Length: 53
Image 1 (tube, rainbow, N blue to C red):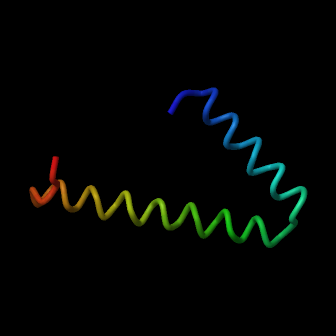
Image 2 (cartoon, rainbow, N blue to C red):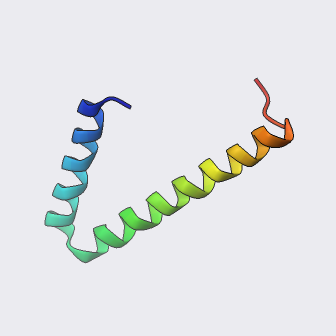
């Protein structure tokens, strides 16, 4: 992910929070947590050699 993409994502997240308030913040936190869980799962699969290419 480039800095431009990251800046765009942060800008969209800030705009969503501004428009939708606390509900958007809660959803963004859940989405981030889900992304972390998926990443950790993939890392674990890679360690066990289960990743399919």
